Length: 203
Image (tube, rainbow, N blue to C red; front, side, top):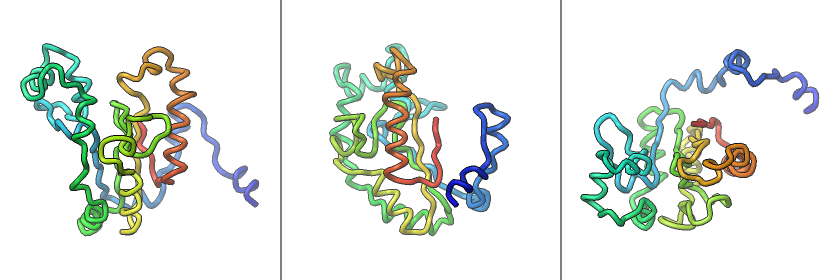
């Protein structure tokens, strides 16, 4: 029966016409309202000039003539690196059960949570990012797992945002094909297998 179901399932090609013909899940069409949570290491400085995003802090501070670097230098000093924010990411006020209850009461039907942004810092115990994830360092918590569990306990759908690339990953910068095969795809597969999201938002 499973083989027949797989054969009967629509087949899609790797082109926009085929991809765009794929219907959205009915639950998503019916949901109407979801909440997107951008949170991570960049939430420690949590600064950007107007019309910029604070999650681009590490990227933007590379421009030594730009406003992000000027802010960084004046507040933290020129020797303070982005990685030095890690011990400051304590998540001490992060209460996933409280958040999920609030989201449900607000009428949300699904939550999308940033598991990894372009800085590569993971909010789950990812084996590919030793000492660059929220379990090995910082809060020492599986924030993705905690939030996914709390959201499901409130009867909401779970969506996970995942950055496909990383600004400063040496493998990405030197060999994109190897990055995809040896890092990105195994990492994304592990994330999906661990948390079984209803939706994945690749960026």
